[in-house]
Length: 243
Image 1 (cartoon, rainbow, N blue to C red):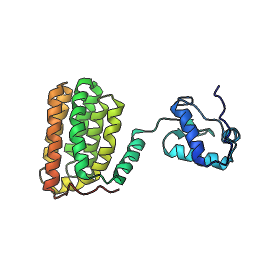
Image 2 (image 1 turned 60 degrees about the horizontal axis):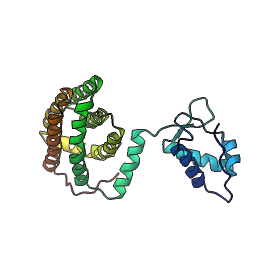
Image 3 (image 1 turned 90 degrees about the vertical axis):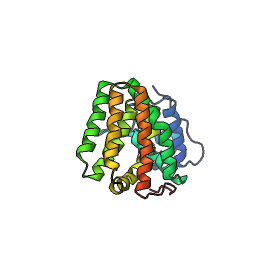
Image 4 (image 1 turned 30 degrees about the vertical axis):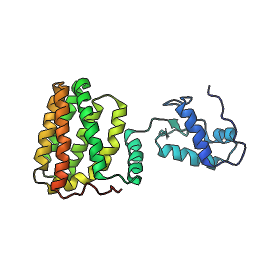
């Protein structure tokens, strides 16, 4: 039985309710899958109107910390998805005026380590997923939008193959910010598609063979080649990224 919330003694904005609920969720007083009390009960415990509770619950739902299952009137605690977390970080990075060069430099540090770790920890399913994504990239060579999607998914699958959620969450905002500009690069740099295909084949083969050193080496080459591709395509790496 969860202990009740302390009433809020003075007029409170929904942000105070959000803060109190987030503290309980972070402390695992309410764990993943637990249902919150009803809006009426929460309003009674906090000493506020139900409209204030609704506003707070909507904010936490937007953040991915709560969801309402079909047929249930109660909110359930859930973990925010990687995509939701990454979107928040991506927006923050854009507001801090990051450039394409900033993203490329970050990826040149992070991605070789991800590839190396993936080679050591990958499962058979991880290797199969990487090969499948590479195959889709090759087969969809005439559809740049799909190619860009497959490139992003390849990077994401590689991070997931590390089985380290911190690495996944570090990588995802970078991929989200990089993805839109890949269209221009693939369309304008004549050799971009073939070079990406070659590098990713080498990476997945090294990961499949559990060759950590080769995985790191080929991923480092792959990221360096991205910079050359942007330069060939005439994309100014010093430009700030915008939403």
